[in-house]
Image 1 (tube, rainbow, N blue to C red):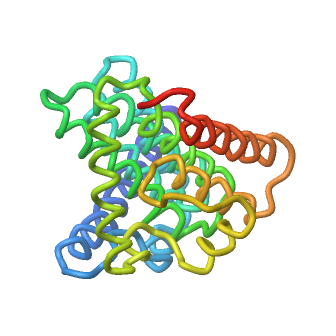
Image 2: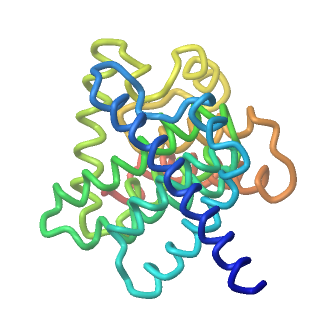
Length: 249
């Protein structure tokens, strides 16, 4: 009986992984078409049916092993897969993005390579995670924290490169009024300006405020609400100190 049960579980696991492979194949095709957002559709997710939870458990098990072994590049691929398997679990998106921005980026040989991984983390949260979970407080908090801590502060030796690249990207978006390319809307920017501004929207700390404010729009409670308000307060204080010339980056 034990052998039969083991074989049954193995067959279910194989079926689940094959189903996941099919979904990922469709995602890969979507990525290859210009103008398509590389995110799994609800139809793709639904196609997994009851196998989704089994596949997710198998992926989590493998992620734990890879983390123990320090194999972060492989881990990032599986973490992204997990995000598509559990698209409405914000913590999964945050885990995947954190690995890209903090674990893998520091392994890169050049500062510009490090920026590409940090930017990939931002895009994963902003363009894919928030598409599946609009204004989610947890995902918005993670985005705000990355802009405040990873890009806006001097805690990373590549921080100045990050800030320079972000300013260039925002300068171009502002010039063309292409706010959608950085995941923002002019309506929300104007709303934030009325409450907290005026701001220089090229600066990463201003982006941190934008995403923290967006998270508050998601009607958070408890610790999530407190964290978002703290990020806004800290960024406002830092911007004011820079304006008064208390310190300079």
